[in-house]
Image (cartoon, rainbow, N blue to C red; front, side, top):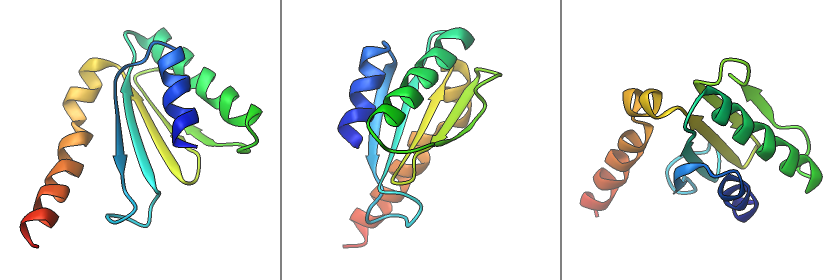
Length: 110
């Protein structure tokens, strides 16, 4: 499923796509994918395209938040959680840093 998600985001011209493996960090999901869109409209279009691709591939109905606003869309597809942001919103919340700090702490503890 991760390959489908990243391919869909690439097809939609999503920017700065980052996939984070959560399997050893959280029971929340197996992967988290973070991407940016250039505008409200682009964020919504990227999310809509991904939702359609997931349905067509047989992954059921993903839960979606924020599609109407287009600042930050969250798609919960079960094993994968996808965040699609406008660049300003992404830099404000800085989710990648939060997960990379956890990864660094785990590595140092070994």
